[in-house]
Length: 516
Image (cartoon, rainbow, N blue to C red; front, side):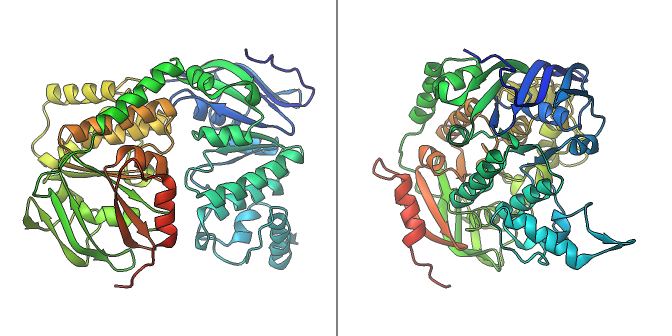
């Protein structure tokens, strides 16, 4: 059962009956949230449950239509992020919200530089930045440009910046989605240290293992409504999933079984759909060979920076190779642009949905139509009835929420934006689909549904390249696994019952990279 709110005198933030409505969408409907000093509080729910909207209400980005909020017992109503920051509430987002072209010190101390009269005292500012970084056990050259460091280090710099303003509440929104295991462990060490110092931490993640490892308490939302607040130790995972998706754990297990059952080993046709021979691009990925067959899922595995994405982009014209050759159906082919690939029914759904995917000012319908219209050309407009049928098909198939094709895509959750991006490419009826992190930031219910869809597409004859940072997911879906390391293809593994995540990790760690 949910624990009663407000049982502790250590309450920092209390949000009660929060309701926020966008045109055509009630994003939050009477949601409660209590954050306490010295606790890590997880905010859980499917994509579209209202997590991002609640965070934006807490941090002053969205105005609250109904309901109230108190900070340290005082009623507040923020009209902008600066007021939330002044109240001691800071946020570290999945996409680091800093200035990569500035130095580490400039980012940490931005807006709080130490001055001597009207001028910035840069030596003193750098010393201060170094002090805050040392509190996180970070030994960095504070003069170095932020972009020279890994995403994990950049996120820790964002946390150091929160220390500068003496934050009492720290919001971590999907902070681990782009980190490897060692980086996650370091981030968690820092978070626990801040928690022990009395900071209230709101943690948002789709990785259940991480939620149970880090959080003390959790609030669950579903369809914009409050489901309950629970002590993490008292809530079994299956019950959590049931609360999140509104279905029993048994029903979810059934979906997973269907996904696995749809993936059956088979003998590919003799002629590959697409073949790359000596394919490479200077500074991105070393030459590699690869055959892709109809009806087969080929997983790409490797650490961040291994060249997974760079290799896949060469297959579909997203980047132009400067070495090697491509053959389609056994015949040489040139793919100088993504449009050239699209017209041959080769598509790629990018991992970076913000820069290379969605257009926020367009509707769901318009975003889905983009690739389909591009393939036909400017002057061959898609008939309205045909487009309506296509859009409705994928809104239902992918369970896009809200199911309103005329909703602006910027108002959708990140996971639903990812579904719209997937729908865009499926609408073009591709023969080959490259899926780069298609389930990143997607809740467990939607993830299993998408995995099942991928398996069914392959069963219908589509060739699929599947890239994921989650090795378990790669193993679950793929018949073959291409292992990348240091921008080289170092191995190709046939997926059998004896292949495990340890098998792949050992291959990554132990395979020698041969220079070209």
